Amino acid sequence: QVQLVESGGGLVQPGGSLRLSCAASGNIFSINAMGWYRQAPGKERELVAVIISGGTPDYADSVKDRFTISRDNAKRTVYLQASSLKPEDTAVYYCNVEVTDYTGGRLRLWGQGTLVTVSS
Image (tube, rainbow, N blue to C red):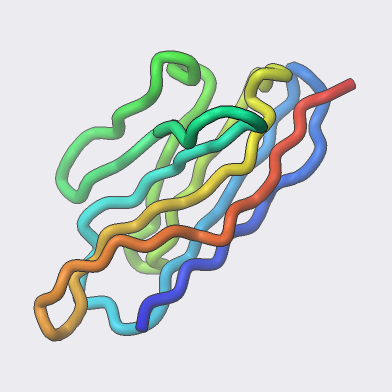
């Protein structure tokens, strides 16, 4: 089995910053891609940022130049540094990870979600 544990959400004022983390553990041979999605109340889940092994990060237009995705392969952890936060960034943020396990199977998993609220 593979588990994802997210952390780092909370309440932040407009213009502020925070960092989300998502750590993967378990039966992992390799990690193919790690990313972040978000879902605001009444809206569909949307891609925020993704980083594929050997590739460059990709961002939603709405967060470019404000958010930075990074990964620590040794820790099997993906981070999302969110800066210059706006009220419209308020959402539940989910990490999404695609791994290959030791049987060669590919799994795509979701974190439990962490709430980010941007408000004064």
